[in-house]
Image (cartoon, rainbow, N blue to C red; front, side, top):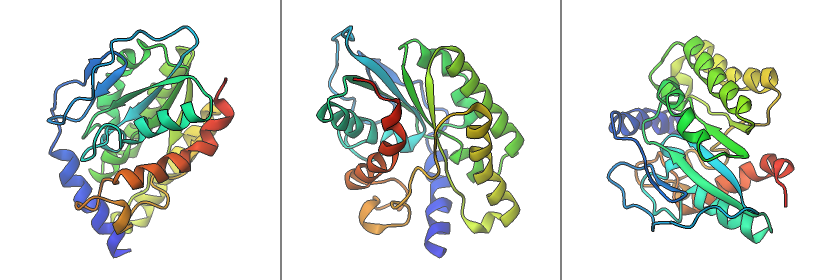
Length: 232
């Protein structure tokens, strides 16, 4: 429990460090969403007719802060999809320090890529700041509604908070993901960092962001939820 508390306490500092960062730079269908990070190799090829688009929409855990672009979970998911015979182009739309309010302003940008599927990993920074969960839920609800209205299938990734935030707040935080998934009838990943959070060997030195191996486990965790939505 102490380790988990430390994990999220440090996360507050790390995520706030990147607030106010510029919008992600689009390079073909790749996105360098990590302020100050090294951009991935440009991808100028247009999306082929037989390729579908999957957008990973989230904060630093999606952006892959602290690892190379090829180690971040969107890139590893891309590789897993291709190996399994699924022709999807995965777009990394993660921005470090992102809140649900900030992400709501980026929905139109996400929809421009005409995604068939969006994996929505957001809300952790809201919780770590102790924001009103009614606002977090409302923001996530609006994001989901706009994505669904755009013809996109949404997979919601849940997050958890440490117990030192109080049982009432932490329970309500975790429950909002369950409620949203039920309300909009969308798939839910109960905990995005299942099996990774607090594990020394799967996290970077900051104890917050996964290593490449940690992101491999993240992909393995989300795969069973994503699989029923995929088309060949």
